[in-house]
Image 1 (cartoon, protein in one colour):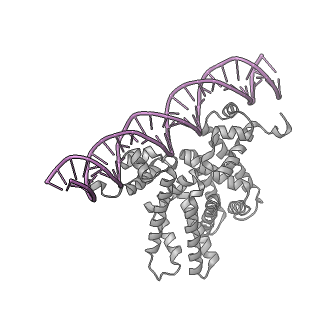
Image 2: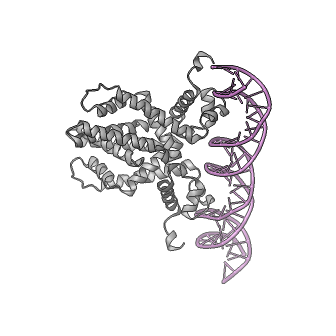
Image 3: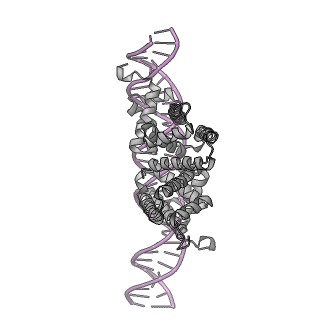
Length: 157
Length: 157
DNA sequence: GCAGATGCACCGACCGGACGGTACAGTTTT
DNA sequence: AAAACTGTACCGTCCGGTCGGTGCATCTGC
């Protein structure tokens, strides 16, 4: 493998899927397209992710992991820590966040059930946010507003 | 035409598309499925909407029209009228609103460009909201929160 | 007043391409 | 030698779109 291909193939595949979603829209994620973008063959993609569902759910998993990591980078003792983390990811308009939305879209369109991990993650976050704050209503409004901004960005408004 | 078929075919087609999206997900909107649900043939659907893009954009148009109508049903002199309208549509969890989200999803997945009318509508609404209020920041947070709730409902969280 | 022409709304068989997935023999990497 | 691919060929299905009709209401000419 050349240096550029050092990262494991499965990671390259996932990031290829993200590139395609960002460039051409969520509906254009096909195994062939991903293979081409990732610089390997269709067989290679299917070797790593035996089905397209597996690929999409892998994509979602990876992004949730990244997102979690970002949340954890907020200082331990920060008040309203989780909420703050959400706010920062969306404000900084990070790559992670944009692509995450796209992945959600792609997943939801093909099979809504694949979103289950996201649902779990989200309700955990809400629980954490509520236990962080003394103003639950206010916190929820802010949280929803953050989701709203994500939504807008997702649809490029 | 029998009484049940009194409504014009094109309306029946659009509502069939909504039913399918709500029942099976945005990705399941196919011309065949719509035809079957609407009680006519594929040819009949394509007679009314010559392409699938036309169908989706017709769907979005119709829903935006309904949404606009709901907004206008808020009393003329209500302060923060537009914002109030948005709030009510989402809180009442109206059929219109749920399906609208689904239509957006379907459209975005197939061809993001079809969302242009929505973008226009949305920026008009924002303009109206800002001119209604003396607290622009507060209004925007509320507006975003409303969009956030829509997003959550769309993904069934 | 009625045969034939016209046009609208719709039917449904069919076509072609895209796509997910399989199979498998060969090649490179570890 | 095993693991991790490559490359090619292929299959079955789905789906958007086409196309030659068909029933039917309305108009036209005689």
